[in-house]
Image (cartoon, rainbow, N blue to C red; front, side, top):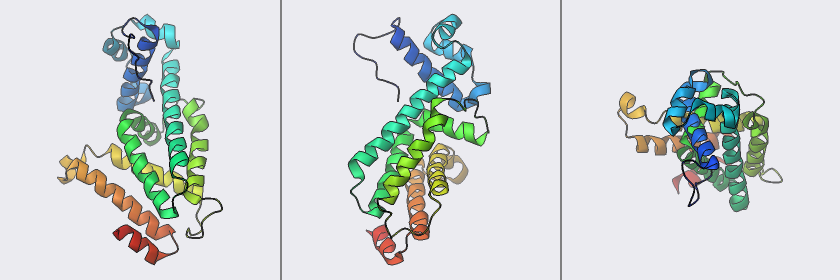
Amino acid sequence: MVRPIKAGEGKGNVDWTKEKLIQAAASQFALHGFEGASLSKIREQVGVKNSTIMYHFKSKQGLYLAVTKHLEQSLSDFVERIVKHHSCLPVMERFKVFCFELQRWCGVEQTFASIIVQETMNKQLHSADSFIYQNIGKHFEQAILFLQGSPIDPLWREINWQIFIVNLIFSILVGQAISIAVPITLGIDEQRYKTEQLSEVLRINLIANINDQQAVLIFLND
């Protein structure tokens, strides 16, 4: 997550300039991917010279690495927060919290969430050695442990947890990413879609993967 600018900071300040460039670059990468992102538009948005980008980041790749470093840190903060505050909840409550908190993260970090979808859908992992792709696996593993509980709760059926967590996360990411288009294509209010899409993710995954179906139905109807 990009650090908030402190009082007294502003245009001309080195940290301010770097962070504004990262924010502008994140928007470009989210909209156009790595290849389509324009350094000129990033420069114009912040109001600096092209040489400023080169000075701080050396290259377009360097700027992209800085963007994905912020993304990786935001993902790390998200997972650590839910683990710290919600690990004592029962299995299905943990699952619900994870899904709702991930949806909230998508809203706060909409640009970064779009980068994940953009890169994955277009098979453009240009920065395979960047922080996000080095470390995303360990954050997913943390999420798995959070959902499983320790020891693994007998409520869960036998699951390939690595595939499960990837499918779960991307179903929420993609669902939230396309929410803007839903009013046009389906005539459904965007906020209504977001709410119902998340409810459907909860319902399908709990019914499919929890042994006690009666407990699931009671939980979903509460």
